[in-house]
Each structure stands twice: as C-alpha cells, then as structure tokens.
Length: 378
Image: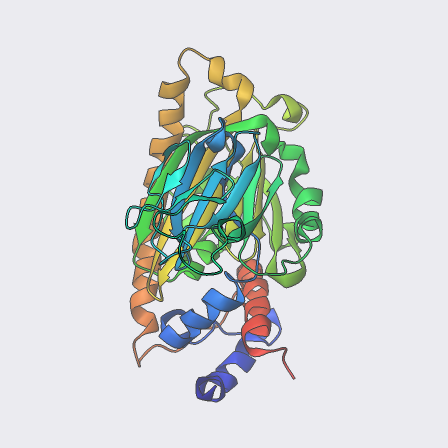
C-alpha cells in the first residue's frame, strides 16, 4: 500500500541492531488502515486466549463476546465437550446469546431459530416450505478451539496452524507453572485509550519499572537484558527476581506446591503473539490480554490464578483482594503513560526516539511485527 512506502525509511531505523535502532513511527499505532490489517493478519490467523476451562465448568455454561470485531460464543455441551462458534444466526446473522450464563439451547431473538449447545440448528419456524432447505446442514459457523493447560484458545482462520506447534515454546518455558492446576480467583477488565500493542509493550518494558513504579514494586525488582530469551515470531520469555504482587512483597498464601524449591523472588514473564502476556510468581499466575477496539482503544482482561488448594483458605477472598487492589494501583500508574504515548502517535511533531539496551524485548517484538505486516527487511 502507499503508506508502506511513506514510512519505509523509519521502519528501516527500527530494523537496525538494538543499539542503533529507533522506535516505530506513529502510524503503526494510529493508522486506521494498519489497524484493519492487524485484525486480519494477527487476530484472524493466530490462536487467541479467550478464557479458562473452569469458567465453563458445567454442561450449558457459555460466554458470548465480541473480540477483534468478531462475535464469538463458547459453550460446553451436554457431553462435557467445549465448543466455539461465531455468534451469528444462520438466518440473518443476529447474535443468539449475550453475556455469560447457563443454557439448554440458544434462540435467536429476531426470528426464533434455535440451536443446541454444539451449534447445530434444531428449530426454524416457517421454513418447511422453503425449497432445498436442510436443517441438518445448518448450524452456527464453527470456530477452532483448543486447550493448553486449562487455558482456552480459539482461531478464526479456516485452516489454523498446528496448535501444539504454536504452543511449543510456551510449553517449554512455562509448563512448570502448572496453570492446569490453578483456578481463576479474579478477572479484572480495564478499558484503555491506547493501541492494543502499547499495553503489551509496556508489560515487557522493564526500562520504566525503576522510574514509574519506584514507590510500588520497582524497588523489589531485578533483571538484566541477559535474562531475556527471544522466541520465533516475536515471542518472549524473561526470568528475573521480583517479590510477590502485594504491597509489602509478602505472599498472603504460600508457595505453589510445584514451586516449593524456588526462591520467594521467583518471577517470569512470557509473551505469546499476538496478545497474551503471562506473569508468574511463586504463589500465582496472571494472564493478560489486550483486545483491540480501534487504533486508539483496547479492552484489557487480567486473569489472576491461584493453585486450587488455596481456595479452601477461609480468608481466601480477603487475601485475593489484596492482590487485586495492588494490581489496580500498578496498572493505573501505567495507564497515564501509555495513554499519553497514544496521543503523541497522531501528532505530526512526533519523531521516534532511539532505543535503549533495556528495550531488548520491545525491539524483538516490533521487528517480528514489522516482518509480519510489511514483509522481511531486504
């Protein structure tokens, strides 16, 4: 496209070695055209984390959402199998479910077509006389669904890439966190006035921790660029030292049983393109996604997981609230910075600055992004 040529010189600057590189031009975060391409190239092709198995514990449990401009419905059928489909009636495309809950079937609120929990059409009034209409061949359009260690992923592409291959690096790096033996203790939703990429860049930007978060957790945090492991396609794994995510840096529970041999300062971060960031601590795991709502807006979902054993603690809810409230403080510190960056992206006066050695993860992420969106550097 024409825009590719106009920003090509600035993309070359980002593609330089880290110590010579600059950040990407503002169009990458502000252009409606680039945003539309991202929805196809990343969110239309990759495996996307959409929730946890325990959120669909019983037959009939479902959730309807809109992600990356696509209405989706996830439901567990009567046999206990989990399914995903487009939340679009096969008649006129109306969404057949809203929110989350438990249902025996789904009924279109417009013309009353009904579907079972596998997405199969089971009833369509006044259609008997329609020629060549076969209800058995009519259903909610299916969406590919797979599960990795209790985490539910979907892919909108008609021919998804192999799921095990897509998760291989994450499995190797983070299997020891045993998220399949954890449950969701809290789910926080935050709406941000910034591009979806800024949220994840901020989470891999340890450069700012000692400045912006100096009064929250920055003093209990230690890492070097050598701690970063770069993965194919922009993925990242980082090992470092950090205290549990509480105001005083002390766990409110205990170590996860499978992390008993790790120090209290055990910490790790992973990024799985396009939009899943994982944080591991000695007592919990956080899974975070930023769903695009436009070039300059996104909705963030933060899943706070604890080992299933911890849920029996009589003070469990009060203890979890300590983590949730502290998390809110940190992300509100971040909000002002990333929303301020977003304002600059549409300004004609913005010029991308030089990168620091401390921005190794971001440099890797952005270069993989540019390769995917604009083709490899020549």
